[in-house]
Length: 509
Ligand code: GDG
Image 1: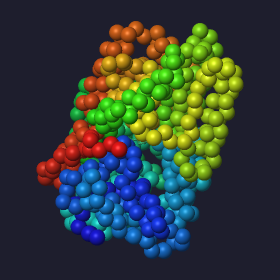
Image 2: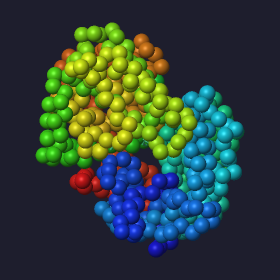
Image 3: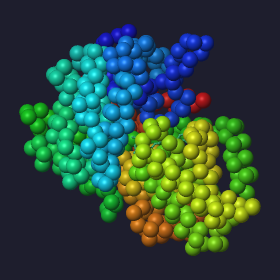
Image 4: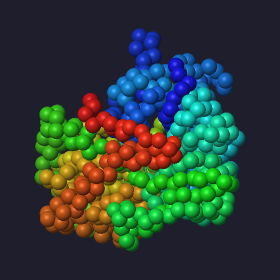
């Protein structure tokens, strides 16, 4: 146990898997080597000692968490995990209801789904305060405390109260909405003040940072003190989420708050390494054997009305209606894995997806051909990569998405040798990085259908050119690049120089 961590990561989920073997609880590194958790853990390599704060289920409020402190030693080195105990009711209230039913719809510009009355703001405050107390318990005097995502929006306020001189960073994985939408939140001033208590607030793309600036200026009177042009690669003219300039500093109540907009990358080296293994060749041969002459379209997401899975299925149904010549020649693979939350709104979305998939199958399937496959349970990472590799097309059609890592994973997995085509919603954060995708407005049938037709008709040379440019973006702005960028920002906040984290590329399996 240590309470002298130089970097404390506050992220609601635990950074390991808990398994019980012969009655003994073991803490094991997550099986899936991709995703945000391994990336965040890689930052521990840059400091002498790191800690992670997460929640753990307890029976009754106030119960001691068994193994409150876990010291992990995995490929990211040694770090501590401090778990705060939350009851089932607290988790439901804080996460499933207030975060997912009240905050999530507003963040994703879904005003009709917003339910202010369902929210339990007192519990939200209390849980956020506990995360802050745990973070301060672990942090050394000059530690940097890095808080993740909107469900911990109030944590910076409480950290500032306990440790007035703490260095606090915050990163949003979601979009940040316009002031018109954000102002729907009855707790808006409290949220903005908490974000303005940070030393640095991070977003995926400049548009979200600018939306926050609008909120901070109009609701709280923060002043813009620095604005810079956006890197050419992050501001394609005419894109729905493009911004030519971005604010990098605000002043508020005598303090400077830095803003940062830098999209998370994926791990193309890891993806290529997994796909270069003999097992991957076998998997690919099997998938291609089963597909025969059919072309594969993949669409990977979670059950969430923001992810546009319904829009993907409806677009596929329209395609099969207008192009009978494609029957028997294409197949759509959709993954839509439900979160284990039991939230009504997600249950409705899941039902809708399953019904639509059934309807399409019922309308178009023949004895010899099934038009689609729907996976509702997670596909193992290695298998998912093989599907990406086998897919001629990838359709990513969210109505709103903070970034969308699947699009980048597809580009990295499919690669340049046998290029595929990415059809991408212009309301995903990554669309500003990848103008070479065939971008579409998923709210418009005409736009989505035109993008799909265009992707199907694209010449091999255009496919190759576009894919080469997208691969270059995904390779250049990979996860290591993001980590280096973030560390540069941390250095500026701390006024020091830190080491670069080695994001694991060779640790699959
Ligand atoms: C949030 C923001 C932002 C999906 N199905 C399977 C599977 N996945 C993996 C994908 C990808 C990840 O889950 C999903 O990442 P996304 O970025 O697409 O979306 P969210 O989960 O909504 O994440 C989002 C992200 O945070 C990062 O800041 O980009 O906008 O909403 O890595 O591959 N993995 C496996 N089986 C599946 O069936 N193994």
